[in-house]
Length: 363
Image (cartoon, rainbow, N blue to C red; front, side, top):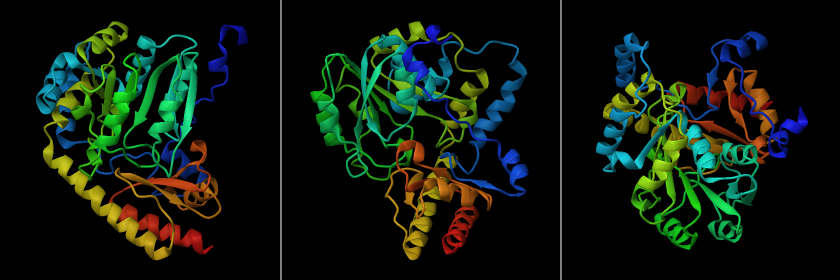
């Protein structure tokens, strides 16, 4: 079997999926757990998206629209970009796969920061490529060192802005300067999964930079702001030529019909978006204030999640909080052994986190 699988895949560790909350509760003998580990929208899905899903169920005997016509039209209208410059995917994860399958061959090289979204490295290694992981500088991307890591074999550079798991951001002027220094034959993937949560107007926005590098691809998702993580629906912006090549690789029915209908409706749900942003900002203010009172170090963020430095390490804190029915994320897989990551929850969930966190610290 080993000779049928190349080295890059053999060295990969499968992504460890979490157990359903119901199963965790059964095993631990607890109930009423809350999950603050996956940066999900605590309000649930967009109500307008739910209505659209219900209205589309009767047509599930039909294949989905392979061109995602209405979804592209809605995105085009919202963002002022041509439908031919938009590509949709089964989550932005699939679009990452499409980029590598389209523009990357065995033995090519990619550059990323570290820690960052773990999927980048998995995709590159699965394609038989090599990855240079440039350490963060003060929890932020070190663009200068990322440029230094570029070689003659580099085909892709991954930029996660805001960066997961740190919540740090790049400003427009620094990212613009970076793009002007990247060779024109290198794909730059600007992953903006959390861009809608950004509060600082100086932060770089891919839509404003799309013409600044010929091979810039901007990725976004409906999973976070719109609460559609379970539908797996993402999209990207790029030049017509780049999108055309990616569409040659893309499977014809890669985005299901319910996801498309939900996405179109969610884009019109401004009330839900406003509630989500308000909930996130007020939740961050509360959590930061309480952690300041406790005297615990945390990292500032421009997203709906943030890092907390915890005594005893992230794995230990994860297990202790879990026993009280509060699910957080240990940052050990990201190399941040002393940290956990949490996302903002509902007000009562944020309060329960603080209460439980105090209780665990006291012990």
